[in-house]
Image (cartoon, rainbow, N blue to C red; front, side, top):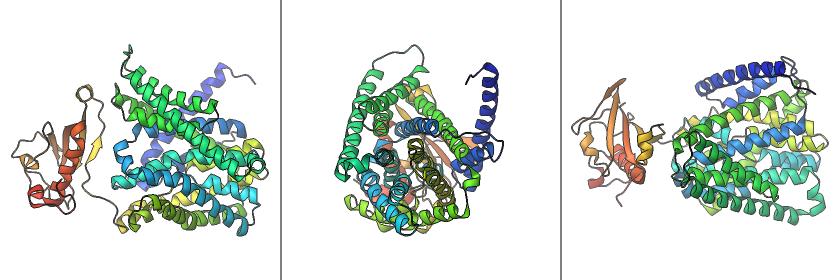
Length: 503
């Protein structure tokens, strides 16, 4: 098959229009509270055989492109994750990504076999592909819900780490290696791939950060490209020695993203843009792969029952057992259980048995597709409400704001945006009474759409937005002081604050 310049022109035209429509869908998804992935999937279905008639049935190509997109999405996730926020919940995140996955696979497989009548191989595959959560789906919804750092950290760690073990598990089942090797050998293979992949990620991340701090590239635009290439060196190197490329790329990117590297903000913005493009292409491709005429009432019923088992049995049990390593209040565990959104990852994993020619792989793809769409629509829009009902959402949380500005990079500073909510006791406090750490300043106050340059005697009001410049080394102390004043008023530190006691 040849590919000439006229086909390239058509491809660029259609691809650009689809990408622009997908970008506009992000705004719509934020308005209605649904993850944008649902709109991307719908676009793929409309472009496919039931819509414009584009034929796409190459499972092996879908498998390869899907894995490439997931690697890029994980790299972006690592580069944009704050290790300081993840560290307090890393034990729970790792437990959810390993022990939690194993429990979820077992419960879904048993339910699919005995309740749905699926053969054991297909039931285990169904449990394996449904178990991992999807970072793109989770955080497209969670970004509108202000949560404690320990919850965000646990969900980030789980979403970034649980792809690796499930990819290995699905691969050994789909290729038949699980039956030949036995359970212990499969467990050993998974452990080997995870450990070696993570170690390679650490080596590449540390060495890459050392190198990036010492080289002077001729163009600032080369730094983001070099950092992403380093992350993919980890992915390719791990895959070459039969270790987990997904574990390697995430760990390497996590290390690189938390180092003081040149043009760090530009690197994160570049990675976010590429990851967004990868998500759009991935979901549209998966929508193209679907044949709507195969979505029969039986498939819909199987998908709904599978989602019931996963959402109301497997997920809560896996979260409860995983929390043994790091107990949390029941309200927070309940929210983590409800926030286990599935997205592209389960659908991409079904391309492995499709590419291997496993019996009923088409049926597995259709069941998972239905399950992901139905339960993302159920859980996604309700997350803000569930957070409020469980009282895990926080108000007046200082939010970091990444700003592309050379002076901030040169002095290693951050710009924080702080909103004074109606319940905040910061109302009536003068700027000078905030008593922020040395070197920190309130540079601007936005009040009713007007920008004010504050003085020490400027009185803060409900609804104000503050722009606070802080050295990175003082950021945690700055945020802590702002929380103290928000909850206890101007005398919080002197009189004591039950929520944020003095050190």
